[in-house]
Amino acid sequence: MKSSLRFFAAFAPLLLAACAPRQVIRNPGDAVSLAQQAEREQQLANTDHWTLQGKLGLSNGKKAGSGALTWIQNGDHYDFTLSMPITGESFRLTGGPDGALLEGLQGGPLRGPNAEALMRQALGWDVPLDELRAWVLGVRMQGANAELSFGDDKLPSLLQQDGWAVSYRAWDATRQPPLPKKVFADKPPYSVRLSIGSWTMQ
Image (cartoon, rainbow, N blue to C red; front, top):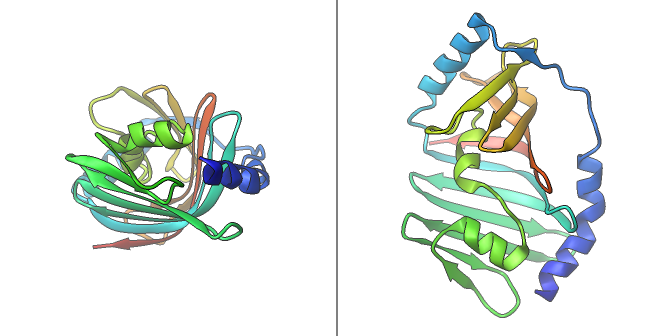
């Protein structure tokens, strides 16, 4: 637990900087935008093997932290590595439908039925990892009502689903279909800030 407290203290200033307010264009979904989004979601429906590299910031309203993230998705199995260059510490979260393993904590690794439960137990973070798997691609999580707003580029600007507000601050339009570069998700008091440096699709 002490290592996680040092992690929060060292990276709180970085997260606060990432959370600075910024004006985002949001237009109600018209027929063209919604049709384009439906096409994107169809194109990405079977995209479940990829690697994402970037920076991740997390806050539970009282404590915050951030670091370099590598997220490998291999079907229903995931491998997250979060590295903190200042402290030299790193956390690794792996698992799938059969359970999850969190490594890097003082006192040894922890096992649990799912990733969300382990994150809450060990670090006090409420992170919707199942939903993020869809949101990070810029698509709606299946099985739950969602409300979309769009930017002038006809790409999602705000996705509201399952009590979370997911704001898309930047897109990589050189890809087809386009993929998010900055994803901010909020459900007070919790927040997730993800800045994506690279995507590798398999």
